[in-house]
Image 1 (spheres, rainbow over the protein chains, first blue to last red):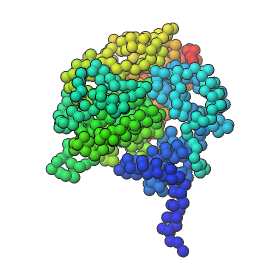
Image 2 (cartoon, helix red, strand yellow):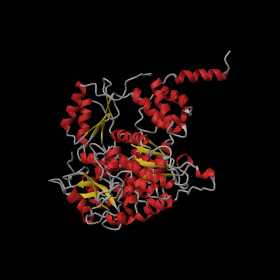
Image 3 (tube, rainbow over the protein chains, first blue to last red):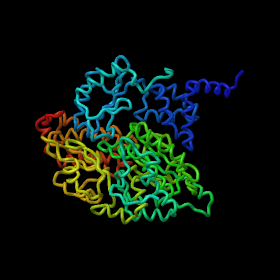
Image 4 (cartoon, one colour):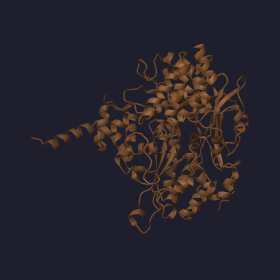
Length: 186
Length: 435
């Protein structure tokens, strides 16, 4: 019969196995940057998100075991930072800037056109699951307002017609996707 | 031997936004000479130069950099435990204040100048480990800095016994995951420790007990950019760059309805009028200047009558605003001031970390009332209630400067554009026809 410690150990191994070797290697490398494991929490969550597109409860549990830090600590971090996604998002993330400079230069029309074209509200994902719309305040390109971040690509000096073109190009070219991929556990 | 001629644009002399200088070319252009110069001097000598230069922190508050550094307890050679004490150095590249876009330019355009500035600071305060804290969205900057860091390690400019000296310094990038509050010094430290970015109470100040309880200096990216040339050319040269009382140059910027929005390195003390009318080319055709925020979203509005004020910390303070980040946001006559204030206050309400009550409850409440007024459902007594909130979140009533920062455009907006607020309420609609 197994004693409690053995059961916990087996549980831990099973939970930790939810992380891929690639994820673990990247996280272990980041752990070297900090004197305490907790310092790598945000980086580690971002590694998982880069691989899976979002961060599930299972992934956080696995991370807590792998990094040997309390699950509650990781959960409190994951729920605080707005760019850690706690539910699935599309592979295409559209972040129109709603900071003050972009607002003054025509954000509202851009935003309306996005919502109409995609037929979704802020924070929602298109019905085919490919595109998520999340406005972000100030992308640090105020002299090129209004701007929008498409994953890691910045669209500058946008006009409403540009939005139609950007979305049309997304339909044609599905390879320009930088998030998601790899192993989905949920 | 590189001949060092004092530059007129010390912050941007090496800046190339399309293709930043690599290590070799940065060194050929005189890069890392300031660090080598500093390395030959004692900590106190370098600290003295920085203090004498009157460099003030470029993150927004304008705290004297030399003074900040001097609070780090000196290494006590007689106490071996203390002399080996870890000290941290952090570059704040979180830049999330709406309307601020200067650090991105510097980070993408001259990553080696940031590293050189940090090396000078590391030598001065005997830092052993450094972090470059970048906001999530600055991916180009992160890639370019990582390339620069790798080259520096290869060349012995980072790591153990740098250039054969006693200085050992490791430098890492930390990319954030959102939240404006991370730009607050103590919240940033909590974030680096892998916690929620709630600000800490002071004292203890980070200079004494910061990251993981160790002495820590956090400086803005632009502050570090100033250091190499100050060391090379001296405090007197640096002071002579300013056109008014403050020393050096600064990255100034303009966004909004001007002909040429952008960023420029200009002497401290350059009048606001010159920045808007000459460098930014004046207002776009068909638009007139109604007001402006001189240094980002958290600074009080100013009016056209203030245009001849020099961009100096104390001068801008004297007319009721702050220099902040030095990036000016233009309010034109065609845009509704109530809607602009609503956007600003909503931003701060969203970004409140929720730690203290006045901020967590006060800002959403202000945002709701502003939305009502903008929608034509406001009442005159709402304006008094908004002023009550301004008082409620005043400095001293909140844990950090986030809510007081939100109150600045709110209270100055209510003061300068009161007619617009009242018209929304009397007409029960927004009189502006906006994009």
